[in-house]
Length: 401
Image 1: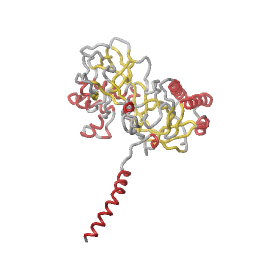
Image 2: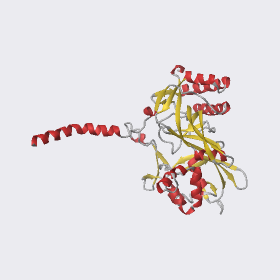
Image 3: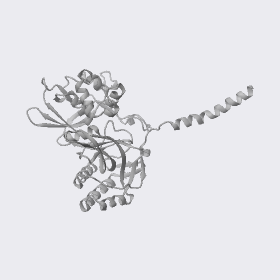
Image 4: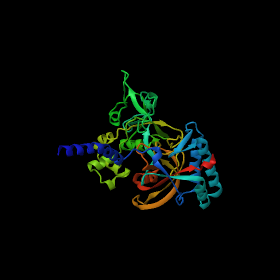
C-alpha cells in the first residue's frame, strides 16, 4: 500500500508542470502587436460618404507623415513599413482618388496595391467622440468658476527604458507620470478627486473658467472643444497632458451600483443623471482618477498625431497594438434619429478612415472610436454609439519598396 502511494505521489509530481502549463495557456494572454492583426483577403469594399471628405483626411495623414513627429516606421503585426513607403502610398492613394473618384475602380486599386490586416478581436466595439462646446470666461466670476488647467510645471514624465539595460516586458508602462516632492520622492500625480478639491488652486494654471462642471467633465473625456467666451469670441482647446492615472469610465460605476440599466447607459443618460443629482456628482467624478490638462490651439480639433481630425473619417485606436496614420476600413452601424432627436434604430455602413488619434478608453484590439465632429448632431451620434463590427488596416504592398 505504501509503495502504491509513493508511486501515485511521484506521478503527481511529474504531472504538476504539465498541469500548470495547461492552466497558464488557458488564461487570457496579454495582447501584443504581433498578435493583434491577422492578414486576410480583402473584404468587399464600399463607402457611403463623399470622396472630398476622404481626400481631406488623406491630406491630414500625408501632413502627419511629413512632420518630424512621425516615426521612422510602423508595424502591421510583424510587417514593418517605413515612413517613406507609407507616405508614398498615401500620396498615390490621394492621386487615384482624384482621378477615379470613390467607386469600383478605386476599390479595385486598393485590393491590388494594399494588404489587408484584420483586428484579431472577434468583434470590435465602435464608440464615438466629438468636439465639445462649452460656455466660459477667461476670468473667474460667480457664473464661471470651474477651471480648465494648463499642464502643471511639476508634472514629470519618466521613461522606464532609461533605467534598464535589458528590454522591459511589453506590458510595462511606456511612460510613468508623477510629481517630485521637495524631499526628492517621485509620487503619483494628483488624482481627479484631489484636483477637484483644490490641489492645484492658486497656482496660476487656469486657462479658462466654465459654468457647468458636468460639461467640463465630459470635455475631459472628449479631449478637445470650443469655449464660447462671455462677451464674444471663442477659444479652441486641446489635450496637452494627462496626470498618468488610469481612465475608469463612470458608466461602469453606474452599472455596478444599479443607477442605470446597462442598456440605458449613454452620454445623454449619464449627463442627465449627474445634473439631476448634484449631491452625488463629486463622488462619481472621483471614480475616474484620470485628469486632463489643456492648451489653446489655433486650429483643430487635433488628434494624437498633431493634425486636424475629419468627421466620420478619423479613427482613434490603441497605438500599442495598431499603427497610427494609416488607412483603415471598418464595417459597423450608425444611429438614425427622428426630428426630436430620438434614436429610431441603426443603419449598416462601411467606410474608409485614417487612424489619427488615440483615447484613454481605447485599449486592446476590440476597441475603436469614431470622431463625429462638432455640434448637436455629432454629440448625439457619439453619445449613443456603441456598436460592434469589423476593423481592417491597409498596409502598402511590399512592391512599393
